[in-house]
Image (cartoon, rainbow, N blue to C red; front, side, top):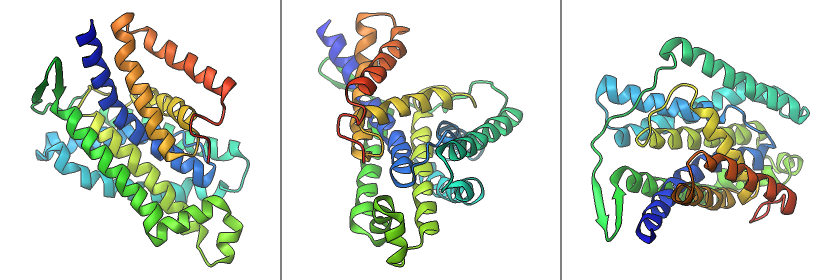
Length: 285
């Protein structure tokens, strides 16, 4: 039992890093723009299908394809912000919610027409490393390493570069940032692009773990909301820690009960956090 628990916990924590990466994008967009991005899950699926197409059509290994997907998703985020979000950015929350929901439905609709709902998978060789009683899959380890590198890069961008300082200034006080000569449009577009990029990168990594369909994004997006509330909505660090907690739960729970109980317990935790500490474990920003 102890060995099984240790193995499941380790696997869940490694998966949690990728969950955290995806949720950081959701949290960043909310923290800077006060926009709940309902197209986040669909964007993750775009990352999955981009990985699948580059691998199956051109033979590009998923990890080599990742920089291509990062650049394309960043541009896609700019496009979505400029066409669907910018015009309603100062409107009530419901307007931005509906705008991103519309983008979500367009992605799903076009994706279903092109790819159908047939499950796909990225079939790459999976190596294993034995560490005592724990067997570590190479895809999990590489994904965790990439998630840590991307997280570190995001923090360097936010705290050590001029665009990052502009993002934080706009997040703190948009009007004051404008008075200081910061372009709100460019900064908000960059924030939305970064959030979209994080979602697509996480989707690309998840594609190396599990089969997926064009409809897979809803489940991951829901997990993202749980993680953001758990860690603190608008707090990227909290999103990463929330991802680790949720990943650990997904690893541990199946050891003691049927896997069907995993989403039940996750959403019980979600409600408890909302009732007891709605600002999340690390506090909202």
